[in-house]
Length: 320
Image 1 (cartoon, rainbow, N blue to C red):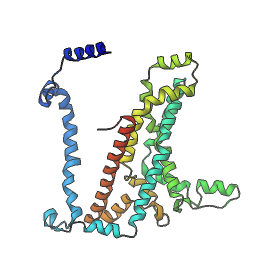
Image 2 (cartoon, one colour; image 1 turned 30 degrees about the vertical axis):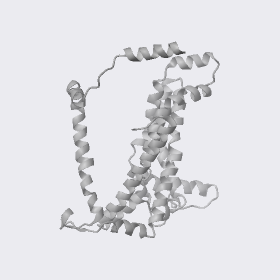
Image 3 (cartoon, rainbow, N blue to C red; image 1 turned 135 degrees about the horizontal axis):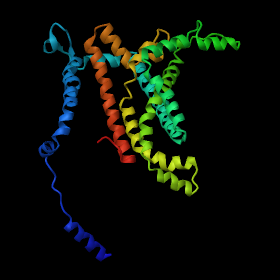
Image 4 (cartoon, rainbow, N blue to C red; image 1 turned 135 degrees about the vertical axis):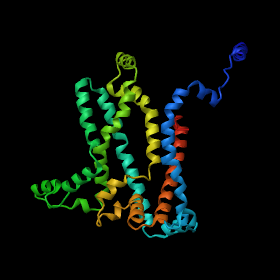
């Protein structure tokens, strides 16, 4: 044992220490790659970082005539107004519930589809099935919401016609507050599940085929190979996707929620994003809407950091 420790110490002593290159030296050495990054960095700075300057609107009584610095500083006035609003709790609850339900139902389905498609031996069938699953992703949100309004209309809609054909009564699902989340999430699954499988199929394509062959020789079933070979390979990608999903927990798709929103289903369809649009664009309350949007962003950042930390503890996979 002592001899082993001595040998280990000797090996460490004789190990060649590679000096770390400074950032400037690395940039000089690989300048072509950094040059390729430059356009993306410039665009990111222009469109993502410079606009942060406008956050101060949330702490001012902004007037376009007076400008940023000419407008009166009001501190946390707009934040207090939002939290004192009787609708604020409802909007936060709607946003969180819609996001959580979306993650719960839409997140695992692309993984399941990728695992199933990967088990199909006929390559032609694989390509056809992938194309069919991807196609809905290219339908615009506007067209999708128009389709939903037609299908779910109580006057000649597909669902109402089917129910009436079986002796039932026509139902107004598009205006139903109880049905809104189901409509929103199920349409998201149909539209995006196939597209979400791309990254998982790409990961599965890199799995060494010899692992599956060896497992078959040992008598492993298809389910056992999925559980012990495919899923472990997908874990890092799944964790990263999960972190990104929770990082956008409060950023529910504004377009679909707004286009499906009616005065009758507003109890569950009114979320922070639609409220910001209503207050900022329709009522020109720029400071108030910026304050609400800033609160939404801060919550997202906190959730991203917390989930990233938890995932790093549990699986050693994280962004930082």
